[in-house]
Amino acid sequence: MIRYLSYLFLIIPLSLWSQENEPADEAEPTDETEQEASDSLSQEVLVQYPVSTLNHQKFFQLFASGELEYFNNGLIRSCAQVAQINIGDPDKFYLPLYIIGGATSSSFSEGNSIHAISAAEILNNLGGTINAGIMGKRLLKKYGTHTYIVGLYQLAYKTFSGISNDDQTHLDMSSQIVSLGALLNSKAWVSQNDQENAGRAWIKLMVTTSFLEKQKMHQVYGCNAPAIMASTNIECGIDIKNYLNLKCGLHHFINNQNIEAFKNGVLVITAGFGLAK
Image (cartoon, rainbow, N blue to C red; front, side, top):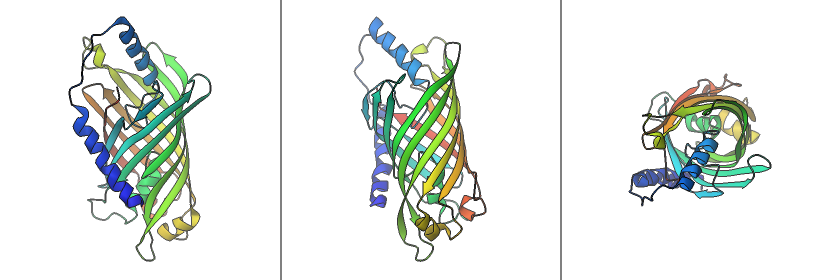
């Protein structure tokens, strides 16, 4: 079942990307719409995930954006923001719910473990065929008008596939994840005269703890595999409207690096795209 969903989520972002540049009806700007855009930017610069165009001002979004990721070990991942629901007041009681669907291809590099995909899915706090939960932020410090430091948090459940060491069959696996981190975010633009297309430059550090199924971890990675994995993600990126949306990151396991699949960190380069208005 998970493999069929993987095929679906590999196709969805490509479909979104093909539609991204379609012309849209333009309306004459008004003072009210300009103020709304300004308010939206002020709120949006506080957060930079799950995908770059995630908007904490809207109550509900469906298939608004996606990402294509290239890993230095040859893996390629495609993911889409299936849905986002914001409940409550961001300054008070707040539940920023999300669902992400994704698929990771087989490695094009030789010498990788057969468990490279499942290890990458565990390592990535936004990985998995289905990744759903709560992801939010809290303003910690503001510098001037456009620069912020925010605290980030995530509570989520994700599904993915592993390969059994005994008979090489696919196993449906899952994990619960808890992530905490911080984000430094500032304004970025191409031209001083083109402030409508201004975006942001950012750097982020996340620490994630994954709680996995012990029996299936032993089937895939051996009897020494842990049921609790810890990892760090350090990422930076730049997102300027109508110009580019790129980020790169280094993901690494903190514990159990004695197991082959968990030894090395991965460098990830990501291109984001979206249809959110």
